[in-house]
Length: 156
Ligand SMILES: C[S@@+](CC[C@H](N)C(=O)[O-])C[C@H]1O[C@@H](n2cnc3c(N)ncnc32)[C@H](O)[C@@H]1O
Image 1: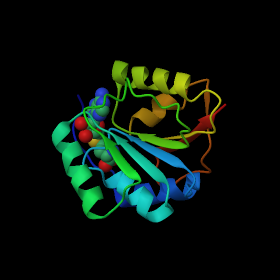
Image 2: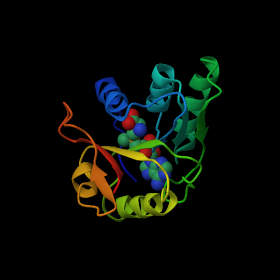
Image 3: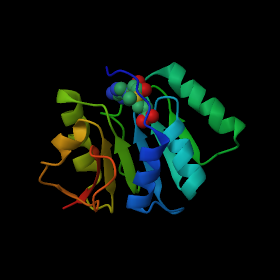
Image 4: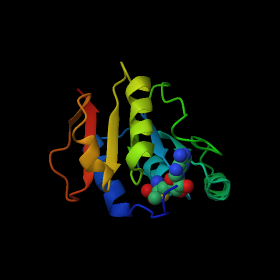
């Protein structure tokens, strides 16, 4: 549904720093592709990480890497559609990037419902940041990042 474009490590490092992700957090990457983001976040913070990925081949690769690195707290949900995933299990932080249009709206509606009452940070990168900035249930929480389209939001 969207083309594959990995996030650069620099942006992931900035997100980790701005959100202050720690070992007690649970981090989701929505559309985790080959798995670099959840693996990097876990290695640097100790947080439990989940990757949601629709494409089985990407997910299989990500699982192989996590297994070889012996990272049992990094899990990849295979054939999972991020519009239908349940995010209500103590979500602390999640990132989404290239979704747009109705697809993005569906994901945001799901996040709005599932994260009610949770202390959650939602991180965006790319064009979707401009859309998320206008949502009434989220407020911008970063203090200005080095990357114009990286956004950190918390529930209003
Ligand atoms: C641009 S890649 C991002 C990969 C990784 N998160 C990163 O930042 O490096 C987006 C990923 O989202 C996946 N994707 C697209 N629509 C999806 C959906 N509805 N459910 C789950 N994954 C989806 C694609 O297969 C692709 O691997």
